[in-house]
Figure (cartoon, rainbow, N blue to C red):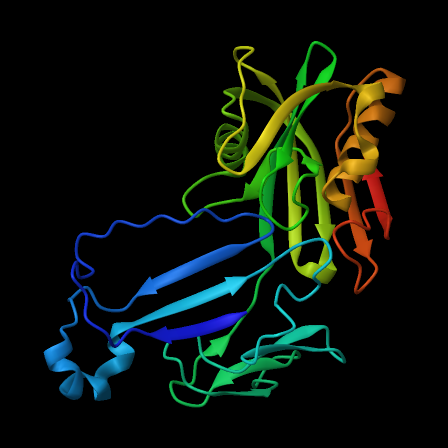
Length: 285
């Protein structure tokens, strides 16, 4: 969902001293661009209307879930899926807000959104999701989601990797944010691509530095589960189901392995349909 909201009203605090940080989750992320740091006064509205774009919040929100292949709401009028190409049709430029056209740029092979105002070519790249599979006394730490999608279902602590951090650092951060748990990464465990929704998962094996954990702001519960007690019918996403199944297979042979695979989701399925996938090109070493 691509939204551009122009703020034309007055502001009692301005934009100067408003520190903002927004977490990115694998199910929803929101990037806010502050294009002006000066407060807007109502008395200046008439002279500012022609410059409204310089005071705009550009809000770019992509809702990603295992069920949403385009990372966008079907109700959005600014970004719609293009079924024939498997890409989203972006109607407005993320930089200047201008209208876009859709064509194949010179020297390229794929259809792109190109701004008709500033000429910028809009490229969309997959999102990197990082998380931890935490082992403690032959049990696995899971978090119950307190946000949508998949509210009330169980997941490994995981989320979008941030700019400026490594994949392992992001996995450690997400574990702290979702489970208030300090962990030590042991090794990479799984690299899972989900092309339909433009996500790549990197899951690390990890251990608790100390046996303390509790629900973070986006979790309603955190528990350690024995392998036989993992709630497979109440997992949040197919990626979590695949990861835990691979882990159990490894425990049966007595050693963890590194896994690569492609999760091909069936288009149009909901988050609750976690079995609606195939695991293709599975490699392990």
